[in-house]
Amino acid sequence: MNSLNSFNLLLILLAVITLILVLVAWYFRHEVLAFWNDLYASWVRISKFGKHLILAVSLVGSVALLGYACGQFAKGQSTKWLCEYDPATYPDCGELMAASLTNPSASPAPTPATTPTPTTTPTPESAQDVAKAIPSPTPSPSPTAAPPATPVPLTREQTDRLAQQAAKVRGLTRHHASVMAFFSQAYYTAICVLLFAGAVLATAMFFIGTNGWGQTNEYVRTVFVVMAAMAAFYGLWPTVFQQDKNLSDNKALFLEYETLQNEISSYTVTRTNVKNEPKTPNDFINYVDSEMARLGNIAIGFDYTKISYKGAFESSNSSAPAPSPTPSPPKKPGT
Image (tube, rainbow, N blue to C red; front, side, top):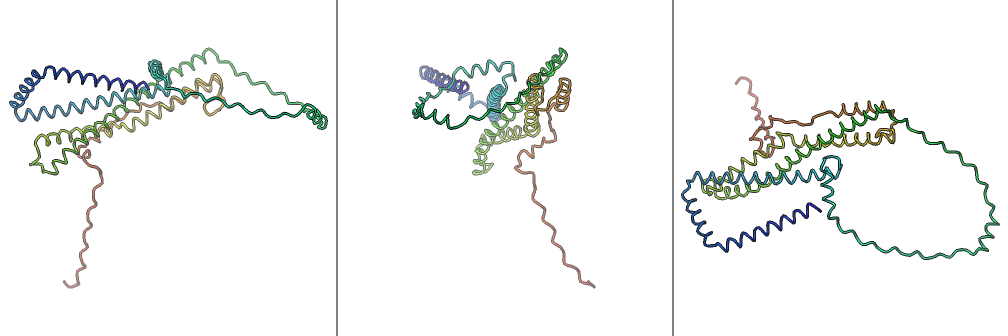
């Protein structure tokens, strides 16, 4: 709800700024027209190479701006979702969640409860007759329940060690959450840029395919070359930086450490692990150490061998099979 209100506020702000610019341009229309004429005269004096360079820089800047906007959106959403999953993930999760609850959605009006219809009860005389006719059974003695076992209290050293382990697990949880958010942001940015670059590239390719390379406008050809380079560059991001693998590995480690954190928090009450296996304090401390040793991994990897711009433009790596040679007929003896 908070993000939706912020988006609506941004749209209103952009509309107000656009309206103010239109009014200012209309009020100073003569000066604006003179400035436009001077700008057009300066554009005419620029060389052809300069015009193509300006167009290329403008396209690269637009793609970079789009990538930055998509990255910031992905960063904000991932932070919000991680805070919703566990408010202790980031230090500022409390403020973020409090801001999201400032505008609660309207709750539906409660429906009035229906009054139950009173049922007829038997008369006292008939109830007494029935009670006399049916003999009351003799209650059997109930077994005495055993008192619950009192857990062994933790010593000062055990409590301090569990607190140290909890702090360590909390830091590792934050680490994998940050790495997961980073690769999620980069992955989302690459997808956004590829969608935009692919649409512009397809449009330029349509005109080139219709008129031919030589007959197509030279600026359209510049757009095609620049956007093809941008699509190839961003298209290699997920494979070279292994964004999908790094994202899934850190997500798995994040969930594992979350489970371990809950185990440590619950042990002081249950004296068992997540599998409901009873453990003494010393055994549980050793169990937590073994789990941290098992999960210990910095899940960040790259693969520079995937840098191949030839593969960036190919939809499939499989090549057509070579035709098998036709067998020659057997030679006749004596020839």
